[in-house]
Image (tube, rainbow, N blue to C red; front, side, top):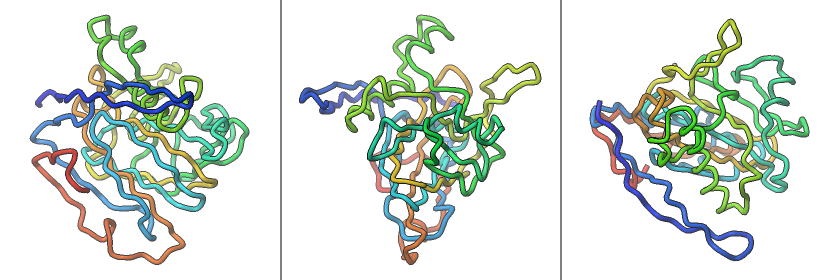
Length: 272
C-alpha cells in the first residue's frame, strides 16, 4: 500500500478580535492508487440542501438545521471522522460524552442513540447506521498526544485537534470550545478488563451513518490524518457529507446518482 502524501497549504482565518490565524493543516492527501472509493448517497430521502466532499486530512463544518438529516459517507472505508457538535445559536452548549453515555447506559453509539449536550438536551439523534457501533470514548489525536504515544519524531504530524482548531477559528470559536468528541467509523473496543484499543475498523467503502438535528446544530468534522495507528487504515480517504430536508419533496440531484466505485483516486478539488 502506498504511503499517503500531503500537500502543505497555508490558510488564514479571521478571529473575533479582528486578527487572523495562519493554519498549515495539510489537505488534499494522495491516497493509494488501489483505493476503492464508493461515494454513496443519503440514507434518508428528502431534498438535498448540502453535498460536500471533505478532502483527506481536512476539516469541515456546517450548520444542520433542526429536522434536517446529515449522512456521513465513509468513501474509502475505515476512515475515522472525528466530530464535534454545538448549539448553532449558543455554542457554549455543546456535545457531552458523559451525558450521552449516562442517559443511554451504554458505551457505544448505535441507531437510536441521542447525542446530548452538557445540559442534557438532545442535539442530534442517530437515525440510521451501517456499522455495528460508533465510538465516542476514543478522543481526538493531536500533536501532543501523537508525541506522547509514538515519540518525538512524529511531533510535526498534525492531528484532529489541529483540524478542529483551524475550523473553529472560522466559526468564532477557540481552544476552550474543543471538547471530547465522536469518532464516526472508528473501532475502539472496550476489553473485558476495561482497557480501550484502537484497532482495524469495521467499516467499508460507502458505509454510512445518518444523524437528525434536534435543534440547529453546528457540526464540525476532522477527516482524521492519523498515520501512527490503524484508525484510518493508514490510508486517509475522503468523506462525503450530505444534508437533506426530509420534509421537502425529493428532487433529482446528488442522491439520485448511482454510487461510484473507483479504483483510481480523484483529485480532491473535483466536483462531488
